[in-house]
Amino acid sequence: MPMLQDARLLLIAGSGVRIKRLSLEKLKKEAKILLKFLKLKRSEAVSRLLQHHPKETQCELRSVKLADAQCTIARKNGLVSWAKLKQLLP
Image (tube, rainbow, N blue to C red):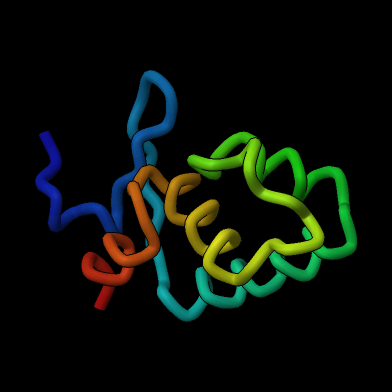
């Protein structure tokens, strides 16, 4: 069974485990792009937010912040918060 420190390499995906190398710089860029698409109300970005954000029903698209996009990215990658994600990545 993988240890917590292996989180940068392993992601739980449904019933299996898939291997993926996470890069903080890449995830930061992904969060900024997600925020841009959320502000443009792109449907794929909105559905991603609704699927992964813990307070998705309270998030109004006009007031969405970078922190919301970061939280969505962290949860999509199996972690509870952006802060936890940052702790695990070098």
